[in-house]
Amino acid sequence: MPLLAILVCAISFIAGVRGQELVMVGLAMLTTVVAFVPVAAQRLLHPDRRHLFISFMCLAFLSYFVLPVFTGYFFLREDETLTIFSLLNLAVSDIIWAQIAALVSLICLIIGFAAPLGGLATAIFPIPRHEWGVGNSLLVALGMILVGWVLLVLFQLGLVPRQFGSGALGAILNSYFYGLALLMIVYLRFGSRQALLVLLVLLPASMIIGFLTGSKRAFLAPAAIVAFAHVVTQRRVRAFWIISGLLAVILIYPIAQFYRDVVQAGQVLSAAEVLQQPGRLVLLLSSFIAQANPLEYVEAGIDATANRLNYLGILTLIVRDAGERVPFQGGWTIGLAFISFIPRIIWPGKPVTSIGQFVTDTFGSGPQIQSATGPSQIGEFYFNFGWPGIVIGWILLGIYFRAISEMFFRKDAPTISLLIAVVALWATVPAFGGTLTNVISGLIFQAGYFGVLHVMVRVLLGTTVPSRRNEANASLPFR
Image (tube, rainbow, N blue to C red; front, side, top):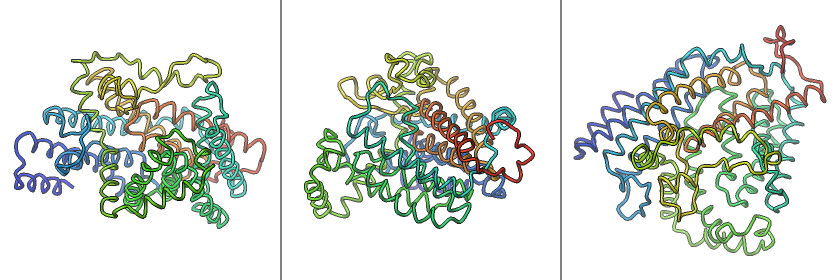
């Protein structure tokens, strides 16, 4: 990898890249080398000893803060529409400072993850010790999918009052695609053909339901989470999953955007209202596909994907403006992660825990634009506390991620732990450009839901079997 980084810098120099732009390339390649150190180190270890979580986090850094240097700056087409977050609209010196912030964050993440503190989690916190078994796992998976689908339909019909909205309810709503992940885990761990057959039927159905909601994330989530389940169970990150994921995003974005803008009339119509006129739905989508130019369609998908992965732009604005034009915020947005644990039915006046509109108003296009902009966790640490926030914050996140890795990513972990490991990946990697609320309360809500579910399985079904390695620990709590 160091040789490849040097080669890219040399090619850039030969191509005429000079001055600060060459510094941009150099920082991008240095970040790549640093990110690949943990990834390469894990590849050298036996699968039983690998820390998959840190590999995913390093790959996320590359996707969100290195790749945009090329897709959003050097390879950008002249006729492409630019937004305020486009790197070509920003001073190169400001981009460089954002790259330095990303590099420092990555180094601090690795330091925190390597520190021994996170490794003590298994001795401090209760973790699952017992296996559900094939029959119980299949039953739980089907129940999760059914409950998730029912809640999704109720939300689309507008039958869930706002005061019932909470992180806990959202965790239950996500049950349907975590149920699919559970089916994949059962198939890989126990060779259950029933789990595979049910998965092959319900996965496409879940993706279609997600597509009809108008959410690209809801459409891609079931397949992505099943892929995460495969990686966690097999303990190997394959290039196939990464390439397949990118191709899926590229191919779905144009038609999904058309569905939201035209079929849903700018998301005015819910999925239930769209399905009241199935002929209109089929006619509009078939017409779009028939008239689409394949080359232009793929180009639009690539552009949309590149923009979606570009968090270097907003980070540049935050690093440039925070502490100068915009005062440091002193941590109030981080506090929202802990407020979010209070259900809205208990605190009807609870503040909105999303800061996307605040980021748009303060660092983005301004209050006249209604849009939720993710600052990335790097940006949130910076606009609260500046450089000390990045250093201390990312070391603490590294310790937090190591604790999660030790508790749930173990080779001998029971099925419930592997399911929570999938939750951890989904709450962090795709949400990397979001806020700290995503990686703290979002992950804890979902893990807590599965913890309660684990206890219910133990009490109501009573057929779980202790993992052989942990039979001696059968008296431990939360087993």
